[in-house]
Length: 409
Image: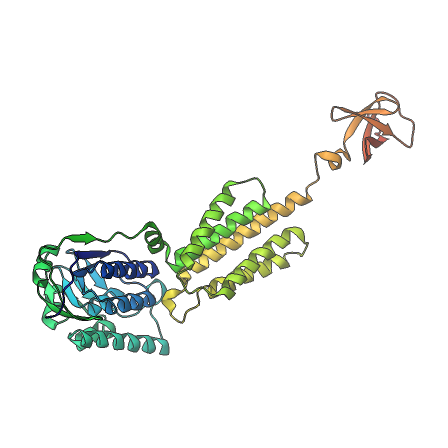
């Protein structure tokens, strides 16, 4: 007789998009369930889909699990759309609650745009092959699985059960566990028997790092956080003492780097963005008639386009996010650079430089009062007490002054 797990029934919830964060959560949950010798793992799915690369990672984790994985689209009203449909096909047992749907797995580009040309045929054929191979492996209808990709077919629970895409229709988790009792399934460790009755339920709770990663692991969000971080640090460097922009910029930059740790980041794109910031900083120090700022803007645009290195359009920054973000960032850098340059060109009003050109009144032939302070004074012409003068130069504690013409009557 095939062995059965001695541990509890593990429940893992997928209630958001499929992204690198959710892929890590599933992989870690299945790993811990195997260590606990779980009777089975119920993956409760309610997802609109997501990234194809993350979906493939999750499919591999399900197929490689020695514990039976039951992919359950629930509760009522939930869906396993797009990339989520492949998870249902990969499960050792596929189940749906009433009033749920499965399918609509035709690939799309960023922001829901249509993939056109030869790339469209390539992506569609690749996903059709994956769907049919998963269906055949689990004894499900490959033709119905392929239609989810080619025709964006979507099935409700009754249709999916009738077509053989799912094995069980259960209104809740308790009903599902009763239907699973004694079922024989294939796992990576060989045939396993599911014994779900009387077992405790263990709801998997990922740690804070995985939850944060699931929230941040979006190319668009990672890119926006990166830009906010760079803007905050640049503002702090160009306007020292502001503090708040530097703190916010540092936090956003750390979160962006954390999010990009699971995304296919191009170091060339990252280097171009960094070079763009450096060129904007140099614009403050070097007079270039705007050429350095122009070069910085070009580097930011090219770096943003190349930031995520992938041949899949779904793992790139959406144009709907890229264009306004780059425009806003370039405008921000231009304004801050202009303010910094203007502040540097403004005449000093304090210190030695601030004394040059100031007016004063002689209190003696060699003493002058300027800005409320007494200084030693020298001049090329004789001066008298009470005479108004103008400061020409500062040499240590002595001022070179010149008499002002008397006011007109």
